[in-house]
Every structure is written in C-alpha cells, then in structure tokens.
Image (cartoon, rainbow, N blue to C red; front, side, top):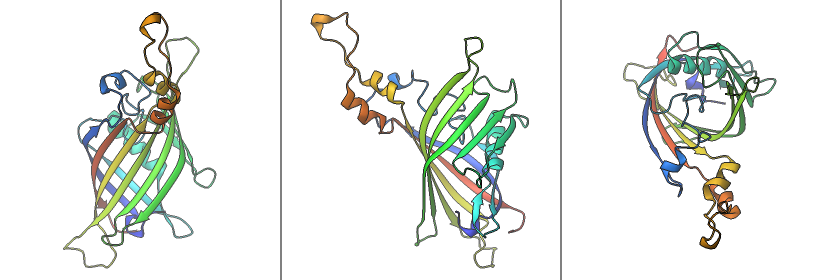
Length: 251
C-alpha cells in the first residue's frame, strides 16, 4: 500500500536522467541483444521508450474499501502507453484485478498501433516498500517478468519476448507554502531507477569463451559459473525523474 497523501489524481512529468552499463560485458555486445530490457520499444511497460524526450500523463492512486491507498495500475499503464506511443487510441485495454491476482497485468494494444507488441503479460515476482522517517519519502520496489507477444516473420507464429527487470520508485512529498491543511501534499518528487537483466540462455552466450587455438573451428565454450553470475546481476541501469502535481481536490 501507498501513503495516504498520494491518494488522488496527478499530472506526471517524466524525464530521462541517464543510464549505466555495470556489467563486464561490453555495451556494444549487449546492444545486439533484444532481450535486454529497454533496448527495444515496449520492453519496459512502465517506460515504453527509454531515452525519449519528456513525457506527460496522468497518474491515479485510489483508496480501497479497507482504507488502504493503492495504485490504479490499469489507469496508470493506459496513460503511460498513450503518452509514449503518442496515440490516445494506442491501448485496447489493460486488465488488472488485484482481488483476483495482484501479480498479473495484461496490456492489449490496438491492431496496427505498433510492430513491437500486440499484448504484454506483466508478472510481479517480488515487491517491497518502506518509508523514510526523516522526510516521509516512500520507497516502492517491484521485480517484473514481462512477456511481450507480437508479430513475427514466421506466418502463424507469434513473437514471444521475455524480459526481466526491477523498478524502484521513490516518492518524496514537497512542501507547499500555500497549503495550510495538515497532511495534504500537492507536489511530489519521484525518481524511477530500473535494473535490467539478461535471460539465462543469453548469459551463457555472452560469457562463452572462444575455443583453444588448437581447435579453432569449434564453437565457443559456455562458462556456466560466469553465466550464472551474469544472469543475476543487472547489465543495464536506467534513471528517470518525475514530478507529480495534484489535479483537483484531495479525495
């Protein structure tokens, strides 16, 4: 659940803030791997086009019948896709029912809107959250397995592309000198940090060493230990900064 001061609707402004390649694998080699999250459009559902210009869209957090504040994930992901694809009709629908399965989301795109995906299945494998007492900053972390289904070059066979990544959001409430109501927040600074991982098969390929000179025609030899390490370490890090401005009154 989220802090009570996030409840309501917000105008979000998002800027790309940079990237890093912490892995020992050269970035020129990684750039040729389509399974690295963020290298292809829509391989990160929450940031469909990494490195693009500033984007703006609405975000919403709602209060449940139990009084908890939760993200309106269906609304937020719909808004994100529309903003990054620059089409109001980009999404055919987002299916998310936290009462049935809080760890699965389905995004369906209108036919012909993009060649990168017809549908995205998003699975949350782990989530954590905490609040920093000193300034009220709220941290939310989710580890995702995303399966992107789309068009392929083989007739009758869909393209299935898995990606694994982790998002960490930080929400810091900002002071508003014009607001005298206790507990009411009208502006929020947000950072979104993303760690992208390679698939296990790709880790084997990326860590394979050339055959000895005496057997130069042999295929590269997979290094299981190195591949295991690479598969569990991020190969790319992205950073985005956001500003949220409250829309309307506090619910």
